Amino acid sequence: MPERGWLFGGAGLLVLISLSMRLFGIPNILTPYPMPLFIVILMGGKYLFPFITPLLYMLVLKVFSNSKHFSKVVVFLILAFAFINFYHFLNTWDLGVKYRSYEYAQFIAIENIVGFLIALTMGIAGHIKKSRSLILGANLTLFILLSWCAFPYLGEVL
Image 1: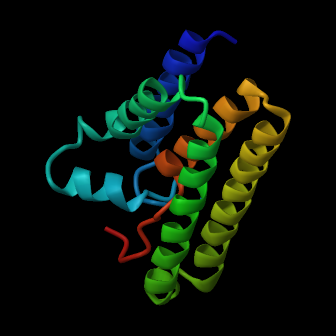
Image 2: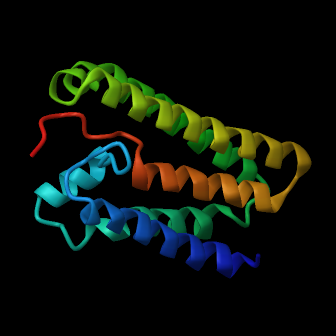
Image 3: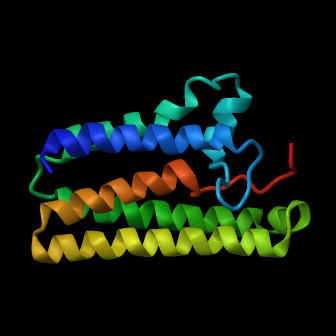
């Protein structure tokens, strides 16, 4: 797929994923509101939130994709967000168990672990094989996680 396909196709997919949060209403195991999107919605940006991660995705591609270190940047971003996401879970796990259920919190954690492992595997494989498609796929997978289930809202059901 050409670069423009990754750029605009990926951004369009991210908009659809972000919009799915509104379609399913309250957070559930299929659409666990990511905390950043939830905060934007509460601050009145309900029409802005579907465009946050697509714009960030496009920015990362525009700024870093022509660099010879793009694969390293993608792997670093995956590891950084995975670590911050893990820290988020450590701090909100009790809320998830209290307000949702142990099974809910566990399922969301598994979604995140599997997603970040897939992205990291793609990123490392792309770096080793020097495969542009794998690196672009890893980057898109990272932003899908950020749009969908990373940093999930685990508080009270609103």
